[in-house]
Length: 149
Image (cartoon, rainbow, N blue to C red):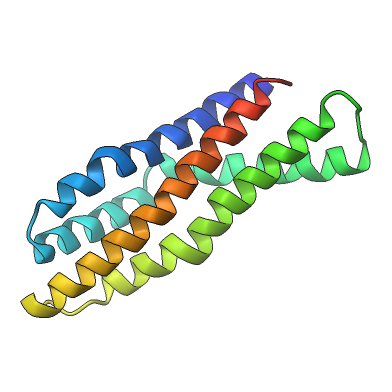
């Protein structure tokens, strides 16, 4: 079962990596209004995709593992599980919930005025991408840590 979790964490890492490395760069080459439309569409599609079950499954799985290992400490492996869970739950889940999602919600409500679009997209893209880098690193480290279990 640990192997499956590692694969799922790797999937999450790869998804975030793709956004950090090329999706956001591609969107930044569009006009601001087109980039906003495209990102809003991506955000609609992702909510109804296979991404969401993996997003919640990995988060719940690691939360459960964290709780179990705190109360059933095993000297050789529990620290790996707890470290991985904390890394993922704070660096990915909490950042998504309190950082990326609110930015996405504000972007969805942004006006379609050209001048405002430029400023809105620049601020959104900069902040969203920084947070996404954090999600990428956190997911990757959580995955890597569990390979030691």
